[in-house]
Image 1 (cartoon, helix red, strand yellow):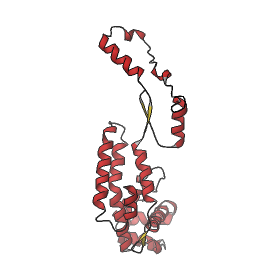
Image 2: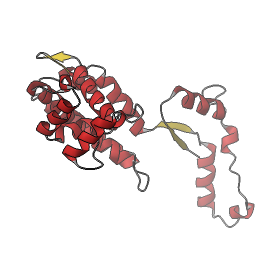
Image 3: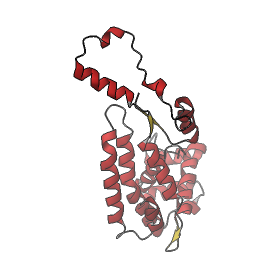
Image 4: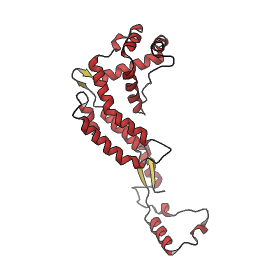
Amino acid sequence: VFRIATDNAANMCKAFRDFFDVGNSGDNSELNRIQLDDESLWLGLDEVEEAVILETTDNMTVSRLACFAHTLQLVIKDGLSKTGTSKGVNTKSVLGKMTKIASLCHQSGPCRERFEQEFGAGSSISVVTVTRWNSLYNQIRRVLNLDQTKLCNVLQACEQMNLLFSIKEVECIRELLDVLEPFAEATDLTQGDKYVTIGCVVPCVVSLYKGLINNKRMCSFQLPVLHELL
């Protein structure tokens, strides 16, 4: 074992250090003893092969790799912490409206029934999961893609007209969606489990950086978020 990938949680980092005693004694000699079920596998090696294996095992160290998808999660958490008020629109308030609308669809029978009347049986708005930042992205995209007239009908029937979005609020939240979209794609790409993902890391970092730089010229509501992401 040369590399171990974990998330960035403090307990994961501590478990790695304690288990491998990395950074404490600095002695990884136990790790360098390769255990084989069949020691005869060493027989028949030529001198070159044996030299390569001995050099590898003598110099082997184990290091922890931070999960890139989880690192993205932390980056976006920091970015979203910079949402505020711009041009008279408070992004946190708009996101709060979305959360309340989603809650109505799941917790209120009459509201859920009216929502399904307008948008079809089984239709809903997903709730946000703290440990999955892209659940917020999916919620924003879902709300913005709804027919706003039909959504108005639902909120009116539920006596929740205070949750309606103004034109500026829609512009504000659509801009946030545009900023986050490349991060959602990178998250989906790098958390795949049926293909090798480590080769996606550098291209993702480069493309995310370039995308943010290009977005700076068009951003008007979400510049603090964009700068934090950069």
